Amino acid sequence: MLSLKEIKEKLEHVTGSETWFTELESDTRVGAQKLISSWKRKQQKLLLEKQAHEEKILFDRSFCVNEHDLVAGVDEAGRGPLAGPVVTAAVILNTQAEELIGLNDSKQLSRAKRNELANIIKNNAISYFIHFQSVDKIDELNIYEATKQSMTESVLHLHKRPSVVLVDAMKLPIDIETHSIIKGDAQSLAIAAASILAKTARDEYMDQLHEKFPLYLFNKHAGYGTKEHVEMIEQYGPTEHHRKTFEPIKSILKMR
Picture 1 (cartoon, rainbow, N blue to C red):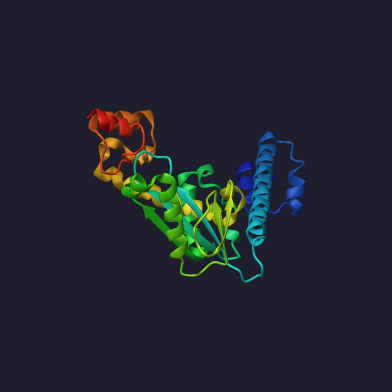
Picture 2: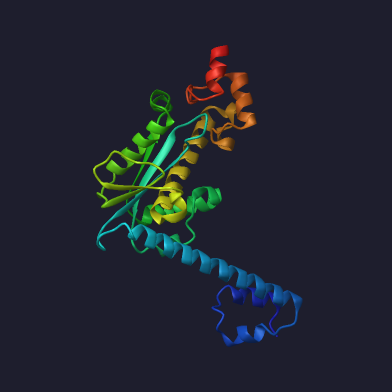
């Protein structure tokens, strides 16, 4: 009889059709049954992820006229924070993207998983571009227009011209067929990939900003308006990286 340690090791490389696995299911030991149940839950999760992955690919391809059409996904990170740039990304993925199974809305994944996926996306992509829209532009234009302009730049800087552009809830002023997709990162693989690239790039930028302005803890809240962040702004005043047209910064500046 296999020890529980041996069972655990073997389950890492099993398909479920092996003879020994069938015999294992009749093992009455509580530990053995727990290991089997855990393995089955993992397999079910992988199956659902694969199905979701295939659905996202089919969604993207549904906008294509022929098999050679290129689909670009576009998304942003950082529209809501009080500090830092809004970052947008455009990406055209290879049609074969099995390495990206499990790719989801960036907000649904851990930072470590996002970083891992970002590297895979960059290696897989036919073309991608990440654009940083400055705080000055955000204050000058407003966050909606600044984001739209940044997304447009991301698309126009792709090395390959896409046949169709799928954007997360935004219309872009470009001469390429464009579709605004509500909750696009949950439906489109290309938009989900763009979401990951934008989010990881912005997180890295805010970590670097933290090194220059450690009092504000940008590496902790990424510029969002947490209670702690607002208290820091009230105590030390806004930096050049804070959005002066955003509340409560706008009101804080008037009081100074």
